[in-house]
Figure 1: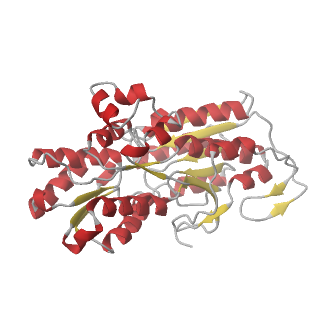
Figure 2: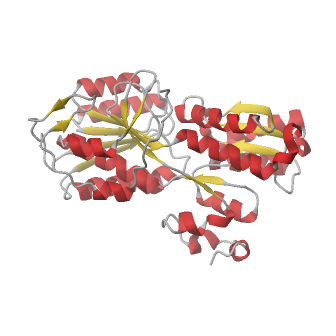
Figure 3: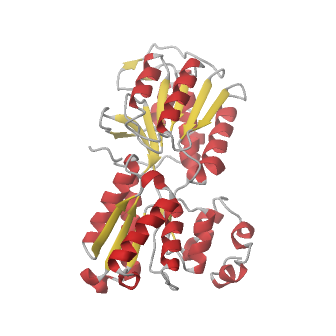
Length: 373
């Protein structure tokens, strides 16, 4: 197995809350067992959360508050929650990890800025007896578990949807630009590889760029280079790895005089992207049910901190390899393509956004045309 997840089951918020096994020892992380192991802690656990940045709206809007709420509820409001955001600074995140070690958290959930750079800090935490859950991005080092979305499926979905939008009849004459994610994010490599496999079967990948720090302004600069090399009218579609970068891509195309956008992909189902999908500026995004991922991570963090290993195992039924660690307990969450036709059935149904939120600010007509009421 490579560094990407091979999904066996979907771990969702519903399944998280339905786990009601009684632990009296059980299977320990790493595969060994100790049927006589006592529960080490009750509800007086301390859970830390390290998030990587604020450019992507989901982290502060969904991940942090959901995890904090779940930790509180799972511990009868007796557990403590400690939080820090690294603002895309890998060195700062290492400092934040050290602070959590010093504060003696029981489990730290870490969404790494740089999966490799965080390795030494993960080892320090483990040496201090602290459990580490890699969240959304698979950190290197001896992590106890990984909670994330099926990264192969994300890339495959983006690639397939882009080919469908361009039209298979266009064949190799259709030139596509790939605006990939950050080279320090292992997820970006998985998205890129899986999407490229889908694209290269049908169209021509004319230009491909890795985008430093996932920043929209860097994506815009990369797209400007592609336009200068290929000509805006010769670009049949754009693979953008996420929604923030899609905004940069669209800005570059508009500045080049393009009025009707080619199909452009995205990921994260950000509110601005949902609106762009309604108006036709962006073709699709990938909706990743953040409540499922966040709730799963929170319960895994609490259960392993308490020593309730059977329940911990029940939440992580898959296995993943990282460059440093084999057979990591993994909870893999599935994803869905978000398009104009299924906004109501996805982000509205799951209460990520209300129709009022989506349709305010001049989007009423676009919503009405899409049947979003």
